[in-house]
Length: 156
Image 1 (tube, rainbow, N blue to C red):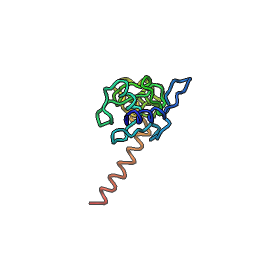
Image 2: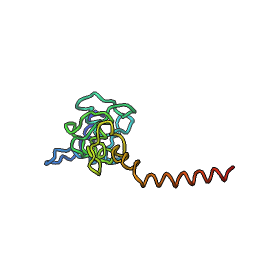
Image 3: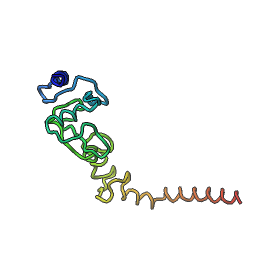
Image 4: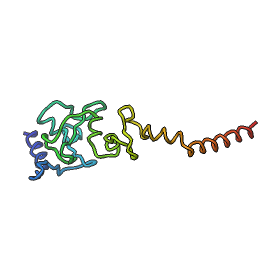
């Protein structure tokens, strides 16, 4: 009987959006994600709902556990049909943050192709090669070495 009351209380905190079919969590939120107190632990609401429908995730996220991606991009959504299990990398790349945006780029700001072996670097290899061979770079190196050798000479 106690469990039925807790379940009723949890399901009472959902408001369904008719357009998107998102189950918007109206209970406590942390960083936009719903929170549920269940069996002595505070857990993420979307993970709890996913477990209720599919039952294959641990209650709480530990390092290395799979992550849950919101297909609808709504952190407060707890609709299990809007959730999918992904790796940490997949979840980050599916996001809208700067890391995901840069990872999806195929050309640098100057139009050079970012080949697969170039990904993961903040600078385009072609742009970096052009810069390293430029007069600006050579002038910087001359100034640096001049100051470096002057300090070394003064120390002796």
